[in-house]
Image (tube, rainbow, N blue to C red):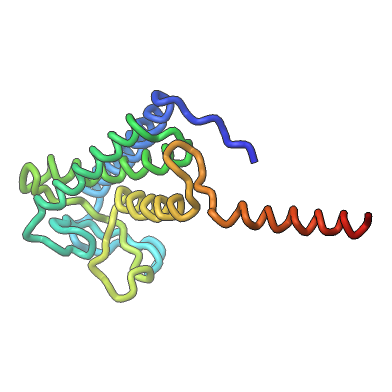
Length: 198
């Protein structure tokens, strides 16, 4: 199977930057709409218990954990964003990796923006959450999320899948060590058949 031509550094960086900007814009725009149009901490049913809107401010991580160390999450998000940018500049040549990292970066920047600019202040801002799907969370009613969270979770799963299938940042694939012996056994069997016919 022929490998696709790797992306140039500028092309990979451009894909990552554009996708990140789009996700960041979508996240911040929907948070703005939620702040302007939703009552605070009141359930607004959209599709019964399947899909609801519930505006709240989250000082912690998922499930509101770590509320007293908000600044730690800010530093973690910033470090993750810097790591993706460095990868974009130095290593990424794969289209799939560029797309996944761009969407992931956008999600990270969405929540990082809240940590930096929203109340109660710089580094400790509360993240705006407003999407609630009670059926999904197996008894965790406080698990309310936003657009950024969706991209962070789905793209982290995508990262795991790309690693498992052996796709490298440069677009090449890891080859299994047992592939060559298997081919050799097949060649030996074919040679035996030819000898028998002779």
